[in-house]
Length: 409
Ligand SMILES: Cc1ncc(COP(=O)(O)O)c(C=O)c1O
Image 1 (cartoon, helix red, strand yellow):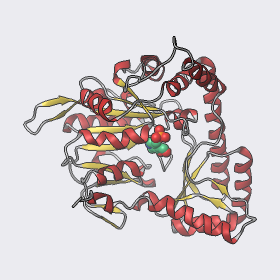
Image 2 (cartoon, rainbow, N blue to C red; image 1 turned 120 degrees about the vertical axis):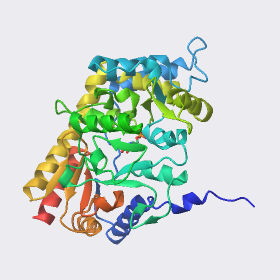
Image 3 (cartoon, protein in one colour; image 1 turned 60 degrees about the vertical axis):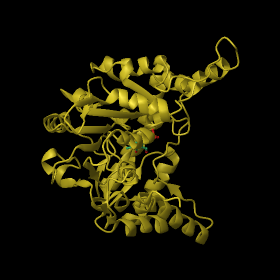
Image 4 (cartoon, helix red, strand yellow; image 1 turned 30 degrees about the vertical axis):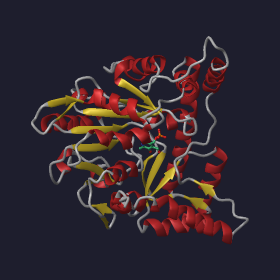
């Protein structure tokens, strides 16, 4: 008898986007003429930068000639991209990250999800609430939790984020000792950013407790306010307690192309039961070379082009465009009297709707034909909020603002 991994039966989270899709479809079926504007799921809408497209074309041509053809590549990524990452994303900003500490992948979701394989089944995990569901679900699948009740799994530690803590918890908020904490700034879903002092407090805590920070910087490129850290490694001593995830998805519109990377510093350790330290970088190398096929040569050439002068300027212009969308929506909602977090260094707005998340979602869907994401879907502490994403055309964003203004006035 083949026994299933019963941990999968505990998973609750797919409910969110399935339920949204279900409600949107029902509304569209009942109102076939309605032009629905989707400000829900965080997928990009603008085409890739011309410099990236040109690089992708060149890479396709490389595959057409014997001299430049590439077959199996290194699972950790090609040196040309690892070096471009280390230089542009870190060293040029004065951050100590070397090319051989960068692991190229097909995106941050896989890496955020797979990293937990490196740790013992009994490590205690902390996540924020609300949370990007991948951190939670992958630990549920791995058997690190009990079942879920009222939106929370037993065995996981939740750090509630609210206006009271500026949506950034501190180590003092931990109700019990933990070994691993997932942090994501700029945050999905709240759009909140963390200051250097706030991140340094987590780094100091992790170093003192022999704990590990899994830092998701997927939205780093949206940071415009000076002083907000782009990387956890801007904090002193973070190399000895943190792994960082990055993604070209929102940075450069690669949600369809697929590319990201993870930084595992040399010297970063976890411990054996007998207290012997074990380096994590060789573990991640082993994990990736065994289970991951690598990101395609063509894709990596496209990602490399993000760092060319033209590519950098073009991708920045696209992010500026989304940030302007966010600013427009934020201004409109603020004028309507809503408290809005995010939207300045993030593509997400976290709107306090002063009521039930799903009821507000339904109101906007039915009365404005605008799709948002109910905050409750990201965790118990998300109740009372909706997430609005700035990924859309200007035309749609302006149209949505007009509709929201008349429905909520
Ligand atoms: C916080 C966060 N991390 C990671 C990801 C996944 O990124 P990728 O497309 O690189 O897998 C997302 C995507 O929405 C995200 O919101």
